[in-house]
Image: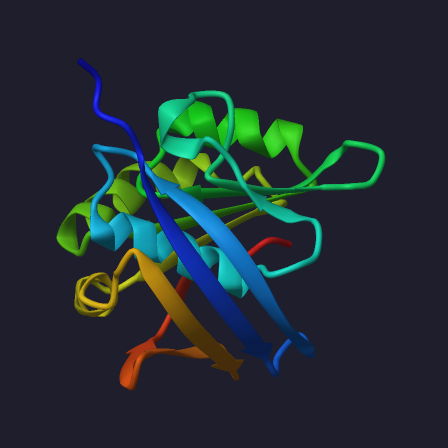
Length: 181
C-alpha cells in the first residue's frame, strides 16, 4: 500500500527588503513520503525567495512535467519555473523553453558541486536560467526547524536570508552559480 503525503501547515511571513515585498502566506504543503525535511525546508525557502501573489507549490516530486514551484500569469503563461535539487540537462533545457524565467536551487554539498561542474557548460545558452546553491550546513540547520505546523519569518536583505521559527534562527547565504542575463 502506498504511503500518503504528510500535510504541513505553514504560516510564512516574508520581509524581502531587496524586492520590497512584505506579505504573509498561509501554505498547506504536502510532503511526499520520499521527501526529506531538508528538501521540504528548501522548498519553503525557495517559495519565500520568490514570493508573489501568483506563486504556487505544485505536485513537484511526484510529477516529471511540473516544477516544485511555479508562477503563472493571469492568462496561464509560465512566468517562473522553480526546481530543487540536481536536475538533468534535459529538464533544464525543457524548463528553459517553457518558462520566462527558470531558477534551480541546488543543495547537497560536494554532490551539488560535482553536478554543477558536469552541467554548467551546457547551461550557457539559457539566458533565462539562474542556478543558486545552498550550503550543506545551511540546509541541515533548516531541516532541524521542520515541524507539521510552522510559523516561519523569512527576512531577506542584500542577498542574505534569515529564517526564524519559534525563536530558532538560521542564517542562509545563497550562492549564485549562474545568473540570468
